[in-house]
Length: 367
Image 1 (cartoon, rainbow, N blue to C red):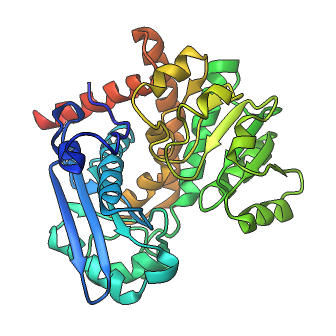
Image 2: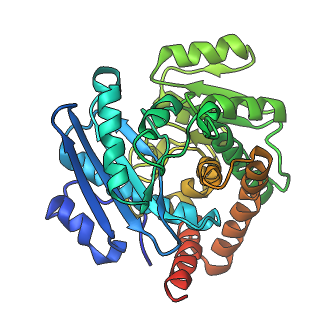
Image 3: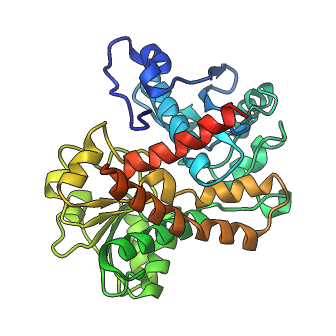
């Protein structure tokens, strides 16, 4: 079975071994992009296109090294293959990363140069927003190619995909509550959200409306202050370490960067459910079993955070919000089916989700 958890960065052979390691399924294509005039350094990774053109966002991040950036692109694109398969989309998995601090180096010239690299793939890769990129950036990138989604409504796009991403995560939480407590609601439950930026602040609103008690944290103080000013019922803690140790926590929602569930955080996690928007939450293979052994229900990240990709995929066919929301609502049923498969097969939910996604991709390869 293919493992969609991140490969260790120090694996022998580095990024090339990660790229070609057959036990992880391999990647079809990786493009290293450089434009000296604008300062662009980027990686576009296409994992699997059996179901259709690769679809996945563009992350803009100050990586510590080029190797780290390539590894992130490989891991994220692999996750997109599985996410798109389980979301029922006719798209394979791809992802791009731009290396550098977007606050310092993001310019129109750089985004246009990146868009030309997307164009050079001739439709094999469809891009969208991710961490560090926004609707306005997609509008710029779209000037160079017709395979850019997540654009503004004024430019023929669907706008901010974080709205449906949060909605899908909320549906995953409802399914988790149904499976664990027999009732699809978070009313009276304490939910901790790590990261209240693009997606997290929408998730807060869904949870409060459902009657949950919400605790938040974020590395950006202004993000927390915005939530507390808008929602006085919400409480905040200093950092993620304090959040995962919160007494009486029912649900932990990682909504920032990946690797939140690791050998340090897992032993002190008080929550009974993990369900969040962050990609690649499991720091390494085996964490999913550790969660299961501790009796913690894990809603696979790439299943519950698929609302955004559902939205941007729909944009290619003429965006309809109600149609997208109806598709995102099905994340509730998909999550429940994964829990049922996990119980029937005697495996963790993450492994069950992998099996279902792999079956769909394998079927597509033979049709």
